[in-house]
Structure formats: structure tokens, C-alpha cells
Image (cartoon, helix red, strand yellow):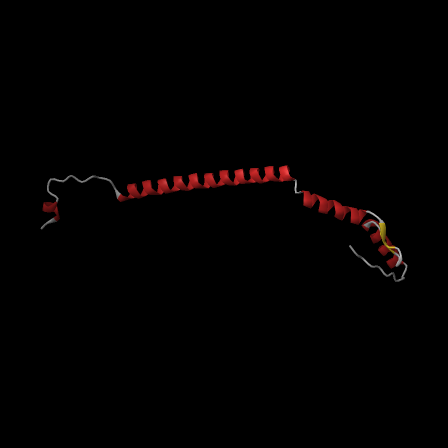
Length: 113
């Protein structure tokens, strides 16, 4: 049978495949934009929740650890008086090292936490 006789009485729809493909691509692009926007909103909400949690708890152990470290670095005290071990501020210790190095002498230092 001939193609013309098989479709006798049927009008062609007149929709080109490129139009259909263009419409499908436009829908896919719109969905991609919606998904990307949703991900950005979700990440923003996550960041906001994280900030709120940090402000609420304040990480007390971290604050205590940092305060103790600063006290050790910037404070002075006796570590072992019998052996003559003392703790001095880190800035002063660095100055002492520079001064001792400039005189040509050797200085024994023991650093401990």
C-alpha cells in the first residue's frame, strides 16, 4: 500500500519535531532553575540553623579550652619550683630567646604544657 492511501482522510498535525524538542528543553531548564533555587534556599536555612545552634550553645568546651590556652600562653607561674621550672608569657619567652641568641651564649629551655 501507498503511504498516501494509508493516511487517506487524515490531516497532518503540522507540529514540527524541533518545536516539541524546544518545549521539552525549556521545561527541563525551568525545572533545573527551580531545583537550584530550592537547594540554595535549603542551604541558607541550614546555615541559619547552624548559626542559631552555635549562638545558643556557644560551644562552652571550646571557649573553656581557648581561655585555658590563652592563660597558659600569656600567664606566668611556677611549674616545678624544685627543678627551677617556671612559666612565662610567650612574648617574653621569645624576647629572651632573641636576646640570648644575640649574646652568643647557649640557653637551655624546656617547653611544657
